[in-house]
Length: 133
Image (cartoon, rainbow, N blue to C red; front, side, top):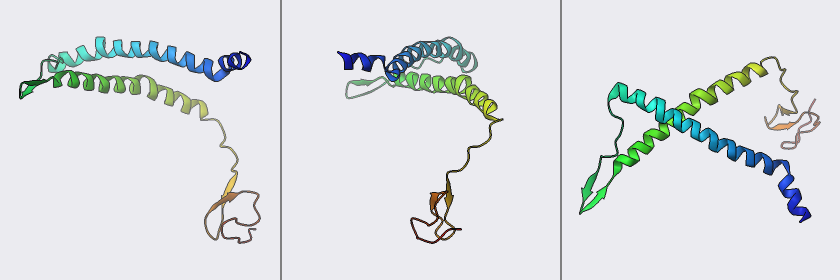
């Protein structure tokens, strides 16, 4: 039981549980955004966006491709909404926060003979064994 308790209280498990709950809640928000705002906007521009009645029949078998088209359009709209309303603003914010930071010191360099990457403190290349200045 002690090991199980440590497993449950480890930071990774708690973080994962919080991420799943937040992801489900966020998924509901994004779905509502697409269903209640973006889809009616498309309907106002191009007409009714419901394709569920599109079907074709081969040898008495009905293929309901309209539901697939609806799902594909919904997926594209959700992906677009997530990118433009979440990913792009967060990337812009992170770039602003990192603007003043200096780049980290390099830990590797290139060998002038064979152009392989070697540690910065190396005195000899591990690949071509040439002596380095």
